[in-house]
Length: 150
Image (cartoon, rainbow, N blue to C red; front, side, top):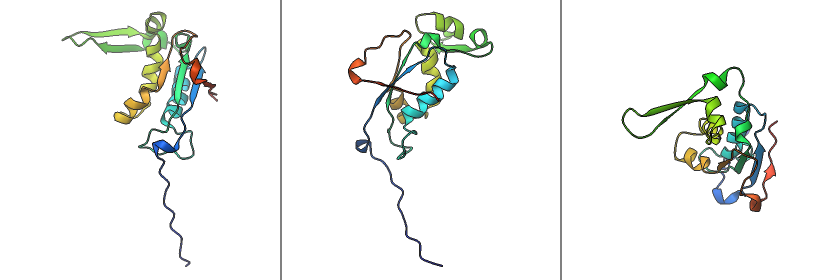
């Protein structure tokens, strides 16, 4: 038996990585497939030097969130809950009504949030997600690249 050389696992540092901006058009894309791809990029798992406890992810802009596709009867059956902060004030709304209303971006934001870690790192990563109901966004100066969903 020969002596094996020990190699230390490389751990990335936040300063080592250059963060990019990506843009995704959610028009006619299935919500879950969109959310998994976006969560992967936010987390940094698309990088070869991925480190679980370090924020290596990129910024992601999602446009046309109101035109995202839900399969089956989810438009009528999927229910989103939120609490106003007052006793007994639990509000519920169906996915169809939420997408048709002024807060259509919440559907995509909630789906991605569920796929991120439930800790301080997950909350930090969620701040790098920018979701807009319509086709316009104020991040043209960052020169976002199109993100492939395949």
